[in-house]
Length: 72
Image (cartoon, rainbow, N blue to C red; front, top):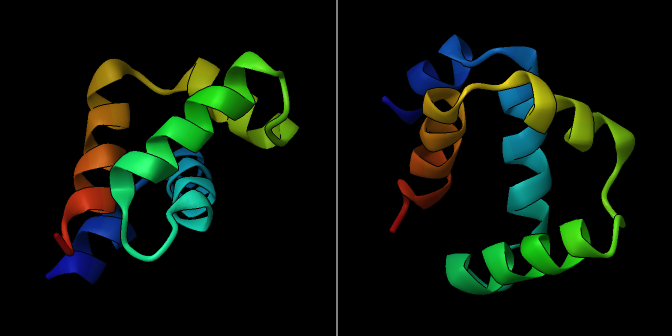
């Protein structure tokens, strides 16, 4: 189920997903994404998240966002 999708993710996808999940307050994904956008514009995210964003394709990032929103 959900674990299977996570198991199939690359390490870079897992890094991005984990960081995004850490920003989601009380199951409010939109607030978490707004916080992520704010941190990106302030250059205030961990280096490995920047690296993951640079390496991942749009499809891979979409898969991360899909997994982030799966519980909702």
